[in-house]
Amino acid sequence: MNPSLSRADLLTALTVVIIWGLNFVVMKVALTAVSPMMLGALRFAMASLPLLWIVPRPRASWRLIVSYGLLQGLMQFGLLFTALHFGMPSGLASTVLQAQVLFTVVLAIPVLGERARLHHGVGLLIAAAGLALIAASHGSGPRDMTLLGFVLTLAAALSWAGSNLLVRLMGRGAAQIEPFHFIVWSSAVSVLPFLAIAVGLEGADESWRSLTAMGAREWAAVGYLSLLATLVGYSLWMRLLQRHPAGRIAPFSLLVPVVGLWAGSFFLSERLSTAQWAGVAFVLVGLLVNQLGGALRPASLAGRRA
Image (tube, rainbow, N blue to C red):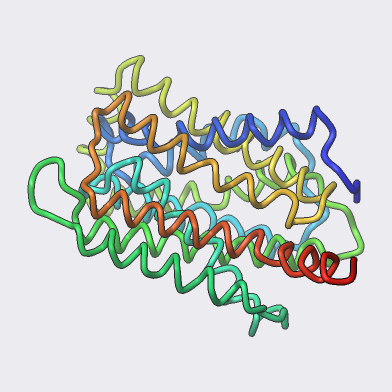
């Protein structure tokens, strides 16, 4: 792994941050035309089916491909799309979803045998306080965050953490896996489940009607989610994680809520309450401590020795 980020790697990381930060506003736009489950089917169908015939299968087991596809596709985005549909503001969603970092740390202890350090616990407590503040700020107005939307977003973050663990397990294997190939094939896994749930909930006629009613704006939103957020974003992110230590790349994810909050305010006129801003601040500080707190102790010890 490279010890430092090149200018190209830095530009790549920032590009992914911008793509994913704007991602939440684009989801809101797409959900004005189709249901959450139909949006999931469209997103992953467009990201996989046209390429499935020309992109070779990645050197990973079917079990890993299917598990990642269901966790990262059906679970994470099925829950997130439903949360946005039921009143979760896009900016707050971009913040709460970053709880995946904390869930990953907690789940890695029993699943991967990793050790949690003091700064992980401190960061977890700070971020948990922020999430509690955000949860307590729910309301029933047309622009208020709903409690259901918050809980569903938190569940989506837990699903994302599960897919993170699969990526780590995949990284322990001897064979190097091409990220783009893996994303294409794992995206195909969730298409039929999404479609089956959509038809089961809405009926075939209503599902077809919603598709035919989509205009250029909504199709462009689906294209953004499929091509940029899924294929480009996740492929570039996985490639960065393959080339550099996770501790060097992961902190860039802290910038996603910054872009997401700005985009929600600028494009959708979303406004946060004082309690929600406080909660966002606590969550971001908690994530910062969790990601970078380990670097403070070696620096402190080096200063004492000097």
